Structures are given as C-alpha cells and as structure tokens.
Image 1 (cartoon, rainbow, N blue to C red):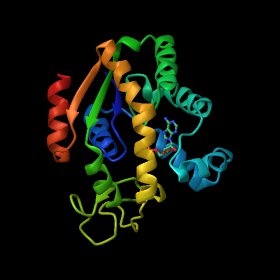
Image 2: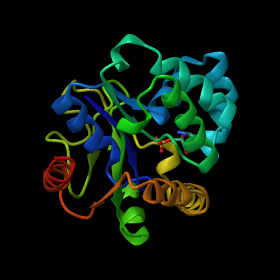
Image 3: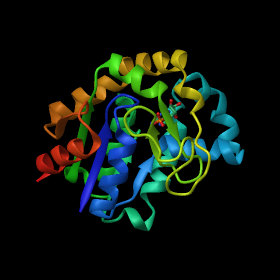
Length: 215
Ligand code: AMP
C-alpha cells in the first residue's frame, strides 16, 4: 500500500517517475495535468473552462481541482494506494488533500517525494520535451529520444510539443512554481514526511534512489 505525492518543478521528471512507480507498486497514476489536458482535448465543459488558463501556464482554480481530486480518489482503484502527480500545487490544495485523506483515514500513510532540479536545467529540458497525445509517453529529444524520429515507440502516434512547453510559458510556470508550490514542500518537510531526491540523474537512477529511500 503506497499513498504518494510527487513534487518538483515542471520538467523534473515527475511524469516519467510516476509511470514507473505506479507500475512497480500497482497503484494508479493520477496526473491532474493529464486529466485537465484530456478535458481540453475532448472539449468538455471543464475543458472549455480551463483551456486558456493552461495555455498561459497559470493555475486552474483550487475549487475545480478539489472536485476533480475528490472524485478521482473516491474511485475503487485508489483504495489500496495512489500516486498524485501535479497535486497539491499550493498550500491551500495541500490542506484540502489533508482533509480528504483524513476522512478516508489514510492521512498518516501519505509520503511526499520531492524531485529536485535547478531552473536552468528545467528550461533546457522542457524545450526539448515531446509527448504522445495518445498514450502519454514522454520523451526528451536530447536525453531520451524516441527510436523513430518524431513517433511514439509504444503506439506510433506522432509526438507533439505541449503548448505550455514553449520558452516563455516555461518561465511563467517556473515563476508560479517558486511562488506557490515551494511552500507545499516546506509544509511536508515540517510534517516530517518529505523525501528529497536528486532529479538531475538519469530516470532509472532517480527511480533507484526513490525506491531506496522509500524502503
Ligand atoms: P502539469 O502537466 O502538471 O504541468 O499541468 C499542466 C497545467 O495544468 C498547469 O500549468 C496548470 O495550468 C494546470 N494544473 C495541473 N495541476 C494543477 C493543480 N493542482 N492546480 C492548478 N492547476 C493545475
């Protein structure tokens, strides 16, 4: 049973680690960014509401996120564990999550993993990031390129650059991160359930360090 929160700046490798960890522990990977992007793609009412906010690299409202997370965590597959990626993103969301987990009596089981990567490295990484709109696989043209040019290794779909992975937006997202998400790290640190991991290493090394620290 693992109840995990992944923290770290955009581009720290949360998505990549989340995929590996969710397979390893057989727990669902819940990415609020993926949920929101899927809503935008489907042009659902939620998608229409959040489209422009995401495009600007700003944060979607806490109220909307609370509904999304509460609904998702109440699903059956989350009973024995889950891995949250992209939530909580600010102190208010961290407190909301506490309330939700307290009701489920699993608050004391929560462990947060903080993947640390310096800003300069983030800008380099994100501008080279490409992802598969079909299966969600994430590549980096420099460090983890797909085998065949611009196609997904898994499902052969053409890879895309996320609209918010362009340089201007990356800088805005990093600003948002430092202002609003860093306090979440302090929050978990003060509660004594924060594990820091050096995210500058390659993905399998980062995974190894996470596993080591979790045991
Ligand atoms: P991500 O894939 O986690 O980088 O998320 C992409 C975008 O979705 C963010 O820049 C926000 O606009 C929005 N988003 C994702 N998760 C949250 C959250 N917990 N709170 C507010 N906005 C979010």
